[in-house]
Amino acid sequence: MSYVESVLNSVVEKNPGEPEFHQAVKEVLESLSPVFERHAKYEEQRILERITEPERVIMFRVPWVDDKGGIRVNKGYRIEFNSAIGPYKGGLRFHPSVNLGVLKFLGFEQLFKNSLTTLPMGGGKGGSDFDPKGKSNNEVMHFCQSFMTELYRHIGPVTDVPAGDIGVGGREIGYLFGQYKRLKNEFTGVLTGKALAWGGSLIRPEATGYGSVYFAQEMLAAQGQSFEGKTCLVSGSGNVSQYTVEKLLHLGAKPVSLSDSNGTIYDPDGITGEKLQWVLELKNIRRGRISEYQAKFPGSIFIAGQRPWAIPCDCAFPSATQNEINGADASELVKNGCKLISEGANMPSDPDAVNIFLDNKILYGPGKAANAGGVATSGLEMSQNAQFLSWSSEEVDAKLKNIMKSIHRNSYNTAAEYGCPGNYVVGANIAGFLKVANAMIDQGIV
Image 1 (cartoon, rainbow, N blue to C red):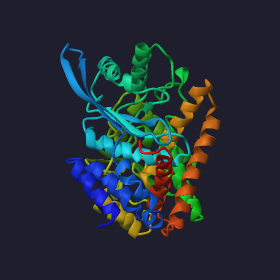
Image 2 (image 1 turned 30 degrees about the vertical axis):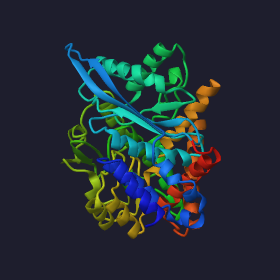
Image 3 (image 1 turned 90 degrees about the vertical axis):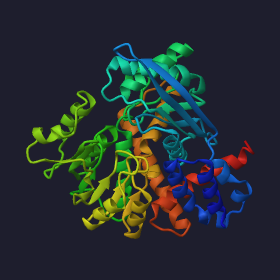
Image 4 (image 1 turned 180 degrees about the vertical axis):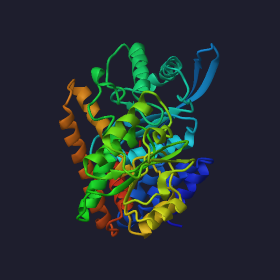
């Protein structure tokens, strides 16, 4: 049995009932075999055993009071996975699907994603099974204040810097930051994704979506192509999806879909800038359902209960959640002419789907590379906070674009160096791993 196989078996045995975490670890470790064939030191130092075990797992009770005076209780988590190259960095997710295994998968992915950004950030993730949907602002505030009352003792601007994720937007970050400031009596850059008036960064809301498109632009450019005239599918309708559509429009593409948990909207005429502004108001202010798009814009089609992957396209941007593309979806995408996948969400393609993309030579940008723009700009926000500065949107966007170019170049070159040219999965995993592993060796057995 190989070193990789023995560690994979151990991870499954030691972490029962956590399929997402098993999947994430398997996807990374299986692509690292060429590294261990060349460099014995990583096995000698037991890097895989160490890198797959979080440095710290924090779990806590979150009691809060709803608008009717009822007492509610949720679970809170923070997974501080690895700090070899910098403070723990990663989002908070508030969603009923949140559990320990999901957050360990996200924290593990975050580690390699942060490594690829070129910025000094370790990997972490956290959140709660609390669902902000249907809650009043007052209820969300009460929950966030209770959540932070426990979390604050474990985080800090040079220790662990959370951000937003699914269910945690500007409103939630504001309530969380306010409670941290109240408890610590200090104004520091302990959270990213803040409002501009109190330490946030321009381009941060747009960054994950923009970055996913920038990475795809680099994949196309490596093949001598551009986005001009290409039909693009986008799943989800939240922050990442919205700004993916916006940047696609900037680059001459034709985005035709968005989705939410109720189904998919397909607009054969394309989602224009004017239509996108209506979606932003629908989702960010009225918090409505994407099905309302059909009534507003005649000619569009609402496909209830479905994701957009059966619609013919040139490029696809899964930007909703993990495992939203399975093997059947991937086969449908390939059959219908899709030539590029750039993942705006974390691990949105299951293993069968990934294999189909790779077997069919699809330009496939895995999430840890393609959606690293969000955390990269969070890192830029940390830099601004540390210097008490605020950069212009042009400065931040230029830095973001350069970071995504660097991630693409590093992934592309590393894949070629290790005998898998064009395989961005192998390239991103190995490049991200080497930086963290070497730092761990440098710092000793800690």
